[in-house]
Every structure is written in C-alpha cells, then in structure tokens.
Image 1 (spheres, rainbow, N blue to C red):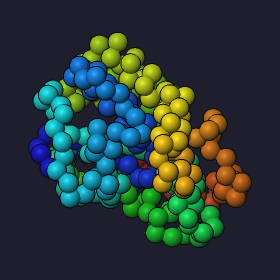
Image 2: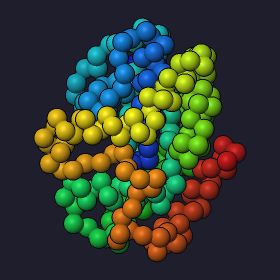
Image 3: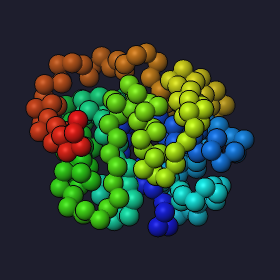
Length: 241
C-alpha cells in the first residue's frame, strides 16, 4: 500500500461497481489513456483487493495519485478511504441475490440472521463510520442514492477532494460511461465470452429499474429497517444527510 492509494470501502452490493466505473472513466480520460472501463478490466483499473490479493498492482496512472483499491472488509488501518453507503434493505436484497447465483441455498431469513446478513452490514458500517474515532483518517463518505440521482455533482465533489478539478467534458464522459444501459451492454458482452461467468448466470447490473426477488419482498423491509435504522440514520446525519 502506498501513501497516496485510495481505498474504496463498501459492503458487498452497495454499488461500488458503479462508483468504480465513474472513477475509472474520469481518470482514464484525464490521463489521456485510450481505454474505457469494462467488466473485463474494471478489477485492475480499480483494484479488487480480494481478487488481486498477493499480486503487485500494475502502474498505469501518471496523475500523481496512487491506485484505487476496492475492499469489502470492515475497518483496517489505511491512510485514505472513500466509504460508499447504500440503504440496508437494497444492499442486503442484492447481496442475497448474488449469493444465490453462486449457489447459496439460504432462505432470506437464514441469510439475514447469518454473518453476512444484518450483523455483517452493521459491523461494516460501525467500524468504518459510526464507531470510528480516527480523526487523522482521510475519509470521504458517498451515499449511493445521491450518487445515482446526481452522478455528475457527486463525482465532481469527490474528485475535487482527491485533487482533481476536472472539466465538464470529462465528468460528462464518466457519467455516460457508467450509464446503466452502457454497463448492462458491457456486462452482456462479457458474459457472452466468459463461459464461467455465464455458467453462474451472474448479473451485477439489474435488468429493470429495481431488483425483483420473489422471496425477498417488501414484507422483509420492516424487519431489516428495525434492526438497521438507528445505525444507518446516524451515519447519514453525520455528514448532513
């Protein structure tokens, strides 16, 4: 880890792939590199620390910043972090769907009661945000719902704090690159040529406006929100949301 590396910290299925596409596209265009983010290259443009564990990162940037490093881990000592917060109901629903694609036979109830369910989400949030007393940590929190609603302004605000006051053209290019229709098309192309990905029928980009899972319905929302609302709202209030 270098002193100018930036860790992107998010619980699984919080929208970090979308944030990664935004950041990678903006940075590639700023660095005048003739690449665009895809589902094939995104894990080394924004380094997936779980997938790339034990490997030396490639050096492709020349803008003065280190690497973007994605992690789903609870807090561990890092000098610079961006924390992505998404509402717990949608996060856990999407994570349940992803685990099911990988072969999990958990029911929604057993998943929510397990270590990767409600308790895992709460522990992740509390260690990075709510119980964190390390004022020396360079920390920037992004709310996924605001990022989706206003990607240009939220991205611009984050990049300014990282030291980049980018042109409107670059911001617009990044937003278009991370457009859900473009990401869906790129994922479909990737799946068509990756037999392993296709075998699991993985789907990072939802097909409709929201993820529909018959057994994980709105009836579970009161239970999930009852367990998570206090921590979630504390985190949102801490940055004025």
